[in-house]
Image 1 (spheres, helix red, strand yellow):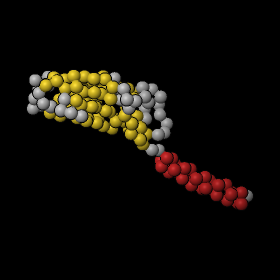
Image 2 (cartoon, one colour; image 1 turned 120 degrees about the vertical axis):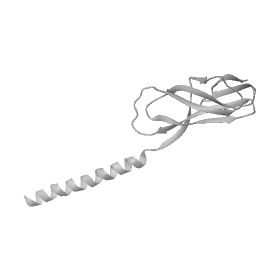
Image 3 (tube, helix red, strand yellow; image 1 turned 30 degrees about the vertical axis):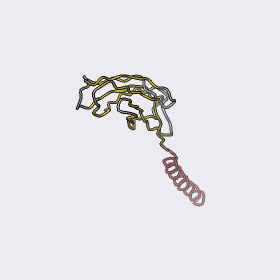
Image 4 (tube, rainbow, N blue to C red; image 1 turned 90 degrees about the horizontal axis):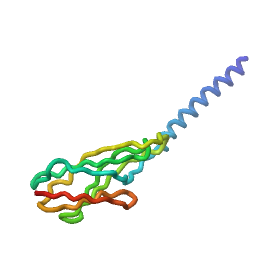
Length: 135
C-alpha cells in the first residue's frame, strides 16, 4: 500500500513540474509582430492655421482581439505631401474573432501655408487622400 501511495505521489509531483514547464514554454511561444492596418476614415481637428500643429483623428477596425494600437507613422514626402500609416501590435495566441473598432488622434506637426495632400496608407498598399488647407 505504501509503495502504491509513493508511486501516486511521485506521479503527482512530476505532473506538476511538467505542467509548470509547459506554462513557462507557452509564455515563451507567445510572440508579437507589427503590421500596418487599414484605416476607414480620417478627420482633421479644428481650423488648421500657420504656426500651429495640424491634428487629426483616424478610425478603423482591427480584425480580431489580438490586435492593439502601437503607433502612427507620419512621413513628410515633400513640403506639401504627407503619408500616414497606423502600426498595430499583433500578439499570437487565443484571439476573439470579432471586429474591434479603434479611434486614435495624432499630429502632422506644424505645416506651411498652402494646400497639403495627406495620404492615409494601408498595409496592402491601398490608400485614400485628404486635403488640408493651411491659412
